[in-house]
Image (cartoon, rainbow, N blue to C red; front, top):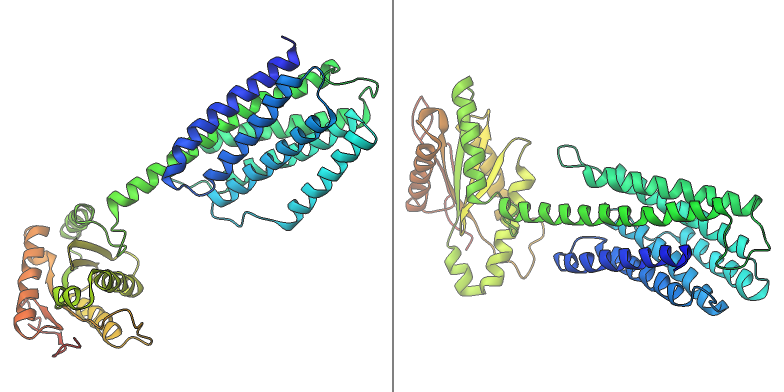
Length: 397
């Protein structure tokens, strides 16, 4: 087997393996991953066809293989942009791809020129590699593993620089009398290094895709998908840490338990889909009124809790009252979302021995609000606080 055939076989096996792994991860709906998968399939197709016909590839085979490689490079770049949340498609790049295809057609079928074709492919791939590396690197997040970002950056920069050097070599120093698959020694060395950097780049992309999937799993385990609130376990963990810190520093920490009034009636009357819309709207309203540092959690069903650090019960009641007013008097009420209200009970964590006791006290105040007519806010008594700093009688249901 010739050296050129060995390189093509290496690319084919590498791209096919990466495509298999990316295909498995594609079911996890990672942004940009399907474009990476399509790019590796195109690379595998091009290298596989050239491997089979590498001794005497026809002009049509050579042209189709080059177009597949360029399209794959653009798809990989667009996938990286989608992965980091940027606009993937750019008119200039599509126009450049169309121009490159026209040039390849001319240098393959009209006026065959291997060195010109190699220079064009090298410069195009150098741009795509460097752009891929920078796109991924610029979107790294502090506090999370960056090994995959480093791997993609290094492989992309190495490949990009080597492709650029190969483009310069073919533009100014290549022997135009050579025919495929012959290479001068420097050109073959550049081609080999750039091709062998692709498997490393592919491994980095697979690592990034897997890391993104793990982030999605962590998010699902921490946040309620419908309301955006912390799930019960995560809320309790965060609340216990805040409670310990508040007791150590004697800084106020108020906790509220909130329950949507007559939620079962909403489900029975309007259906569970309408109930889900109510929950989603409630979560959005709470997040809109929360400050940085407030902690919002879903305890179960239609029952929620909010922790207000460095806030008295009276101030916390005022903030919850603003939420209740916004919910009862929305500026534009969708026809498919029933009107609703909630009741709330508040407690001061410093007056109790643990977060569990504080939650129990707030829960007792919640039931007092329910018995008093619902759509009310009740505060735990003590230290001069009013038993009912705010209340709104009646229900909009």
